[in-house]
Length: 403
Image (tube, rainbow, N blue to C red; front, top):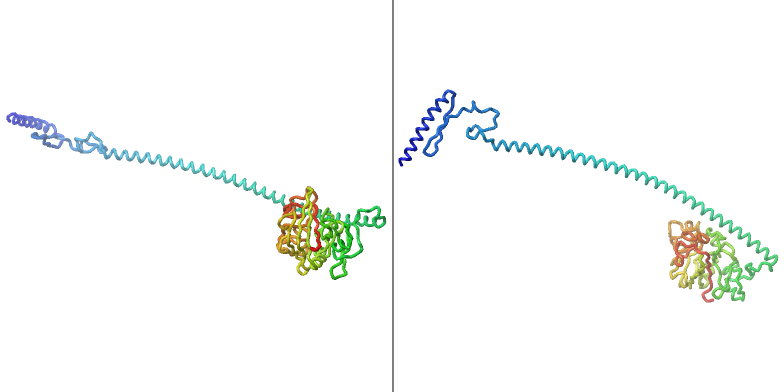
């Protein structure tokens, strides 16, 4: 206990002496006194005024005990300012980078658009050239068709001249012309009557219209399928032009010994007297032959446009009839009676029962070998050779069903 009292008195004496000395030295310069209590001891300090010892620009606090340590607040401000500077720099760099990228993309798009424009211009030039070529080909096709028709007419006239010369030679000297078709002066209603009369030789015979004295000449086939066949159409060499008018198809045209059309009016009157069968013979350019046989055939009158009626198909030229049924009206280049707005007779050439430019036309344009494929206007029978094959020869013949 006495030791504690002694230590306390000693501390007070020492501090008092120090205080008196320190006060004497600081009074002259105007210092301020501060007292700190620590346990049983009391400490007194004299500190200079803040106006005399701190610079206005000093970054430190006014507390003299902590003036050697920088403020955490000021350090945070500096760091925040540094981060803002870094972010601003990065933002500026990113903006410049993006700007360069956008400019590069724009330049690339401009190049692509220019390239596409050049390709478009090239395609337009190419299309224009192709259109010009197509127009030129169409003109050439029209010219070729016209030339072909003219050539067929010339061939027809030439064949008629040759036939007339042969007929004249046969008349003057029959022994030198055994190949001329035989003409008989006796008249019959059809070739079946000619055959039954005992005349069984192929040739040209004079037939009489039913219930009339009007006559026409026809070729009679007395050999095929038992004979007695009246030939109403024949194509074999392209010597006759079948692009004819309604009137010509009505009365008939051509040469019965070669290519010809017997006439719609005669066939109509004949087939309405009794039941007739129709047989059609076909030959292609590869040496093949076929036929179609209809058990019942007749034509309506001219008032009904010679409408065709067929029943009971058999034969080797297709199981389906290439002449559309029920019956279709007959059409020619000057009488459009088909079911198509395109005028089939003018487009496909020839007179026929076209329906809507259907699967057959045995009176179309005659094309020679190696030129007979892919011809939409040739001599066609769809269900035997397809729509683009033009046949070599055809023969249409009729005979009474009870022959």
